[in-house]
Length: 141
Image (cartoon, rainbow, N blue to C red; front, side, top):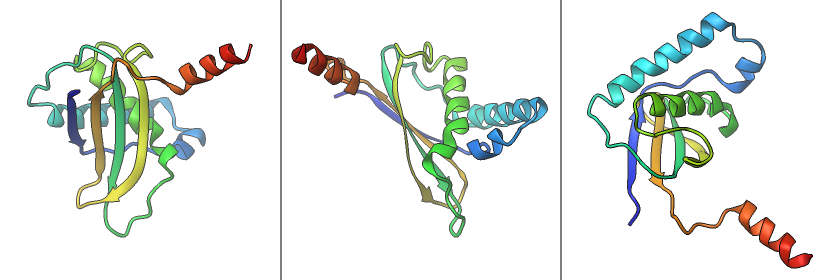
């Protein structure tokens, strides 16, 4: 059975809408530092590194009564956390050879705002949508 790890990071970054409306360099650095500090807390117990391809699944946790963002608005949070996984040597890289896919599930309600992250070892025999598309094109020609 492929390995899977689930962790909770007590941090959620700004929405993509906010970033698109202009987040200055200083605020971006402040955001990355806050994420790094939250990840230091999460990963203080060392997680064994993943050595092969993975899939990442992100699920925001928001306080009861708060309106959830659209799933795509968590993209900044996801990207910063993905970069930090490399910085902590949990992933060897965040390029397409290592991170085969990312998914953002609809937010869940909970006491503490943050981001659930599931890191799944990718199935070596998996067929991607691109693989299927290319095989269909090859069969049609």
